[in-house]
Image (cartoon, rainbow, N blue to C red; front, side, top):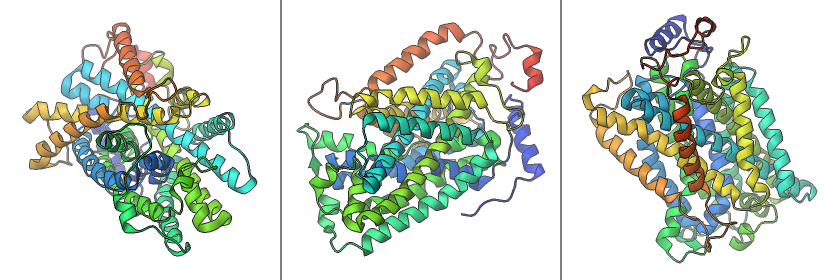
Length: 507
């Protein structure tokens, strides 16, 4: 895996011609290579973000056995989802990605609801990633200076991170691509450094039987099967966001191949590296209960503190925090392209504002600001509820995961009417596709279920309500925008579009 050379003029012309065939005029800068496209999905998956921020959840919800074996099993099924989605991405390489695929294969309503689910998941991901980074910054401050994080201070740090990511994204896709390329090596080196230090320095390690067979239930539910099922959230939450490769396809050279490869590579590399990271952390647990109730507020920080001391733990926490910042920055890029594309097809309120592209940066500036603003609103309940962060992560999963499966289901339904792109699964398309659809259906139900008992206002899983809310919002807005919303080639696409828009290259 090495940075690809700059896209050739011929590659840019081919992909821009393909984009015109799909009905859109190129307005974004095509400055990203194949490695950069892989890097953005790998950065969004971010094992140093997902695994670390939900590690405490895993300790209570199934324990080591569910974390390790759940990671292995979920990773296999997610790879099937990624393979099936990559095939459809190769045929429709646009910034709209999932909703555009669904619209083309199933019609306007399929595209409409897929787009709203995808948007909910992407915005929930920004909130989950950046709030997790804020928690880790609080843990770092506790280790170094004895600072006691509160929900209020964590929220202030979270807002600061959102502003940082908005500003970085306004500089254009070239900087985003550079940061993501650095992020790949930072993540891989970070995992090697953390696992290596925890393997060599501490004089105590847990037994293999503890790491791979210990089941822990601190959820209040009596059924071990139920607990193991909801414990899969750690892995499924981490394995999300790989649609970023598709959303950046209008800015990627040879996108019909590079975006598909980016999706698949980001999953299998994360699968291997994440298993190594979780195994290394779990072997280094010294006191299980003390780790779960760590004063730092972040159990992995306690593992590092027990094994490496204050200085070593602080240094490795900085490695994790930087990785999480890379992750959040990449997610803002992906979400803003989704906002831009959805607005380009007039699906959002005030679409004329969100679809505008900066003249100098060739970046959807207003879409960037909208993305971080909504992410901030989604995380606000964390000021009052300790379980709200888990709900935000579940919002990400149940929003974005069904959106992955809908284009795959419609592709299967289309049969021979679907015209594959240059990257195809061939005869494996149907078995892999159906495996992906069934898996997504199962996890969507799982992550709408309560995670703690007894179920109260403080412990309720609000992800199902968020999913219902976005579906209601999408249904209501459909009756307002259905005459103007449409992708190229549909009857509604040209309604109300004037020559000024065409001249600006918005459509």
